[in-house]
Length: 326
Image (cartoon, rainbow, N blue to C red; front, side, top):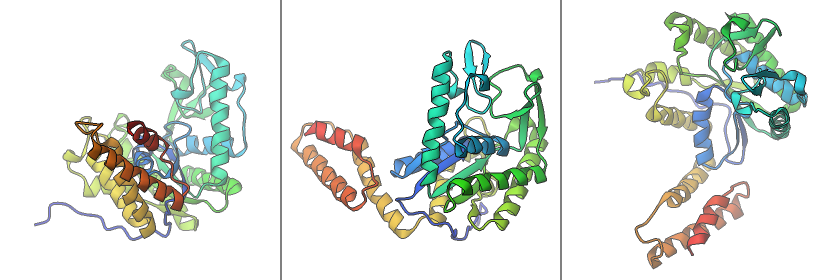
């Protein structure tokens, strides 16, 4: 008997090598996937602007980055004893205006430099609902707990969403015309929108992404939303809030992503990296035993062999720990 509808996804035309530089942007689900890229020692810049949910916010962040924008005090707001940017997550907020601006502007420079040599970008959209600040007449990325009365909330149309997706692609091509783009829609339900409005919001994203991917050869789509909604539609795959995918679900989606995107050579390196990661986490009863020291030496030797063959790999923390034992 079959108890689930497993989704068979064809091999993607966008293939990852382990040496590829990867940027992730978008919702909190992008951060969940990024942890696996980090674990396997990919070169990744993870959500540099913080969590972003809608296509307008992602477009604005990329536009500022590509144009090498530098924010000034007038671009910030002051509320609840802190300076904030309407285009950034609250992680960038600070009570000191210069500290706030330094974090924002340094981040633009880092992301700009990374994008110029980036190979793949994974963009995850969470919602087609946006908030517009009435006085400033701008769509914001974060309301920073400012009273809701100062904002107008509305949903983008399919056509508006398509336009912003195409503008995202155009901005990326300006800075790096070799970049491959993977779009995905977050499987996390925006339950505050209500059951019906959440589904309409996701449907708008899905329709817009589908049309844009079909028109742009450098773009592909990964069905994380569909995997969660159909293949993993049992509540045992959800966290306690019954909204977010749990660890098992995220790992399953990562495995599906890996299967269709990674080359054989990429998997080979990942397997070696995993061995070192497991050794790094291993804590024996007697750390000073000769047996454990031989184990450490073997892993140092493996690291040296790997880094000689693949110079992009960084095992600085692992080597520091292993050498401290000898």
